[in-house]
Length: 374
Image (cartoon, rainbow, N blue to C red; front, side, top):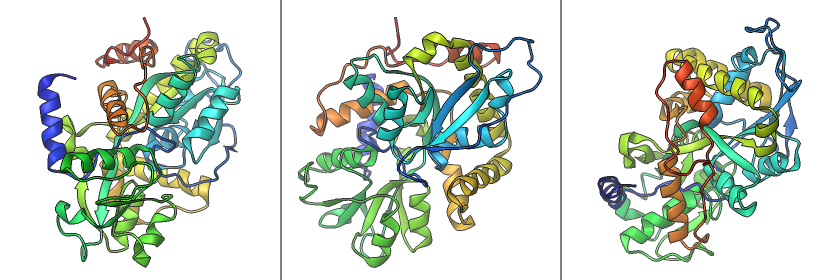
């Protein structure tokens, strides 16, 4: 990251409350079971565009039933990914936590996954670079600091308060610890005790804790943030405002290295589908929001109320760009917080197929920030 960018980011941090750092188990809150849930197979196109079948009869795709996984929700719901697969069927699987999705990917029961950078980094480092590759971006943004306006009116008021993050060492947790250190305040990263009480709370529980007054605020992803607002909270900070161009990675697309090696044609077809899905979402915001909510209802049994999805949806931006430089920054912050050792991320990205798809679509290629395969 260049000097200008570092200066801009550090200045933003000094005026803000937290930055999401995706080094932990969850990249975002999910609505679904902790274990993987097999969904009905998505039907592929009956009329292959080039008349050729792909090399695999099915592709198993994992994702969270969560708005930050909108590309998967909408792409599968609308058949936009299946349409590119030339007779190969999609076998969707939903997860509620990054580690369980990574376990499925590493165990051979999942081929491609939508997941946050945190579990992607952890899995890559623990396997010494053998288990996965990040092959595309999927989403940016969708993280907010929401507080009780009766107790907290400014960022300085956070001192002495109880602020929830989803999990020790996860995206928002490390970000908040990083901001605290910038303020000159002290918090023990293991216990969360210090000048601010960092309360690690599952996103599904956070709204009740907020209503009961056991926490004073939370730095959380959507739709939890908008749920807190609907319960009387106030957005003190939209995290995207802290980054250059308001962009930072929150969801990636990853693939098993074995599946990538054995079935590059299938991976390329899925990427064609995700690129077309993201373009459709950008051009059809209202329809896409409704589609994502319909998918959530099908997966979890209930849809998000307008008071929650309406403000949550526009804060999440789908993107083909993995925003690789922001992943590196986030990783560095986790090291600074002393929650992980310095990881070797060389080779974590393989954007060759994505850039092939983007070029064919007349779109600009994207960068791996020097962390790509050689």
